[in-house]
Length: 379
Image (tube, rainbow, N blue to C red):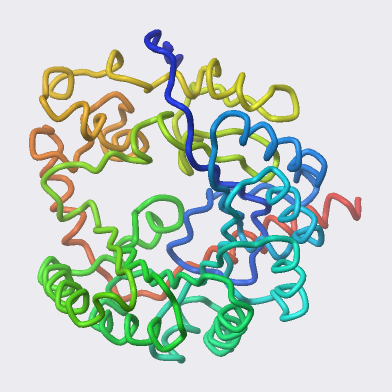
């Protein structure tokens, strides 16, 4: 399938850049948003290229860069990369598992200009948290590093990923974030892309659990008003209208993969027929303004009914293209989250599918990929 690009008004300036420094990670979270096919260490772009990307991003209008992965601290040049982002006058946010990031490296990152750290917390219960992460001792390491972040005076956000195994402990996780000294906590219900699709029936909460958690969050906001900001990302599967995914395709943000490919969103590579340009061959401005992938679903010209005539089309921009493809087979279809979609009933069906089987961990595929690469080297 070949996709036609949308020709229209010049794009807005992007505000945020997600820098996926590596897909390497010590954890194996069953909801990992990284692609099923991980990019290898040997394909990662180097320090100088990242420095150029940050400078070009700043010139383009980007205000903040999220240093992510995988685990970004798996890069030996993480301090140099952070310093380069700081020199470009970008607000720097390190998104980390906190496993493998030492106090010494954290101190060096602070010296390099790191502004903010986001640490993921899998549960308020240590045993459950380690089981979900697929790493024994992860919970203890996360708490220790969070304390060091606060001690160094770096702003801290706790990212609590919510699903069936921990949704009834939302209050305890917010309490924990407050105790750790976080200024913000994100109650991030699992979004079903990447590995989360593989584990959907193992992760999906019930509608009753979601509604109960929403009420709990409102009570927590009142209790902690002025002490901590509590943000919520709700699961699509229980919604009536789609969210404006990424603020609209190619409108306000971009992702750079470990190998240098530039994507409108995390899961964009699942859409066949899109051409992704790389920072190895193109400037970030050229990619943002002219690349086929960013033009494909920018604006509204690409829309089919019911989106094309919907008064909400400038609010939700048709919802998520990757989800539309995954559930309908057509990336131009209405996001099935929308009650006007002819596939909306499928969302309810999938939300009702549950099993109690063990998680399929992201690391299992990564281990197989590494083993295959080692075998090739040995040959």
